[in-house]
Image 1 (cartoon, helix red, strand yellow):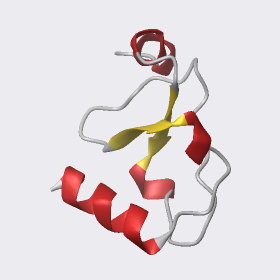
Image 2 (cartoon, one colour):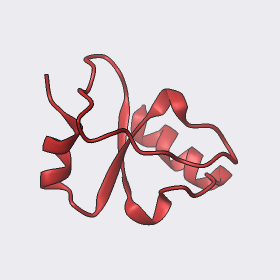
Image 3 (spheres, rainbow, N blue to C red):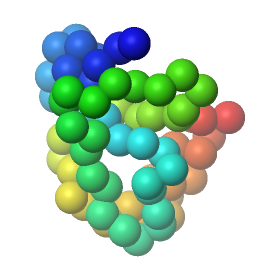
Length: 68
């Protein structure tokens, strides 16, 4: 299994979030660094500026395009 901390070592200006926990007009939260990423689950590595920031419609749409 890969831990979030491993991904963040290669992407220090980003945080990892679980796509299942993202909702329109809700704040984006980071997954804890010691948590293991689960196979088959969709995650995003987002800019630190988005942390604790409500997702706007255009941001959600852009992420949906990337996920498909």
